[in-house]
Image 1: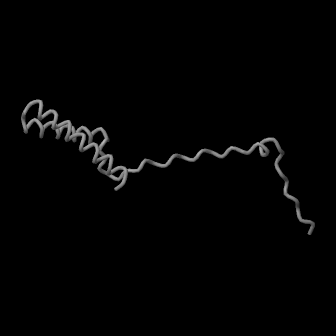
Image 2 (image 1 turned 135 degrees about the vertical axis):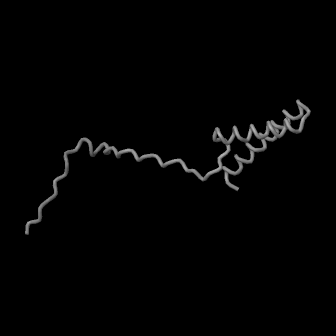
Image 3 (image 1 turned 90 degrees about the vertical axis):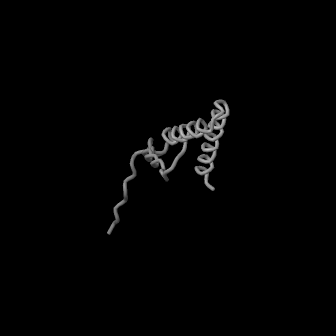
Length: 83
């Protein structure tokens, strides 16, 4: 089981527990169902519960900076062959 699946399971359990608390406070099964539905939908909407297999784009590579010896030395000249 991957990390995303574990996080989704934890968020769903959290929604169920919060729904149980609301249902217990109101002493109503319908309040439990409504509250749990609201918490699950809010988790989906906020992105805490991820349904798709979206991967964030890779960061753009930074341009390579020249090394210290490349900065201070003159460019190398290629030797010409004597032929």
